[in-house]
Image 1: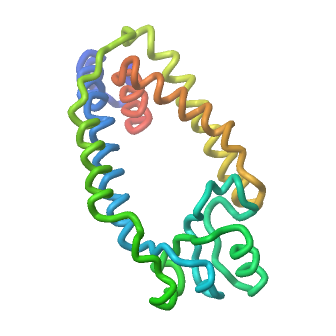
Image 2 (image 1 turned 90 degrees about the vertical axis):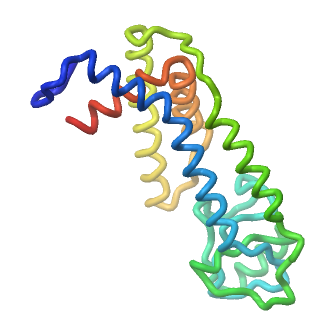
Image 3 (image 1 turned 45 degrees about the vertical axis):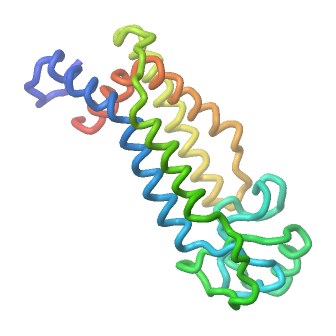
Length: 202
């Protein structure tokens, strides 16, 4: 129900939430496209032979789960860390906005092209134009959306606690909350959007 101080009738809030829900995936898709483009511009695919202290490794040539490195990335501080990276990877991605740049001769020029980035953006644009079919009534979906929101919030808090304590992150646990949220939005985006509106007003 409406929160104290909100004079709008419930129907008006639901209409607003419905409109927000319809654009939820579109807005996220647009932000993802912009973010990917900006991130690609600051990352350099680099041969591990060119690594040195002061460089920030933001991505590996494999999943972080396959290597014993911090999930949030690694600021190289010692030669031991350089050797560890060289033994585990053939190349890595350096974020030059967060650390030193490599020598040009070690930069791998065949990194993902602008055409590949454009293809990714085209796929995101396709998501923007997707017509969402309502699979669950608002009243029926609301409690499930609330449970998904609570689960995701708890998972995120636990993940941040693990990162702060420098513990390994339990990705499968976090995935459960994300999947619950996605499933709820897919069934009826208005329910999750309505909860977010109530939280904003509350």
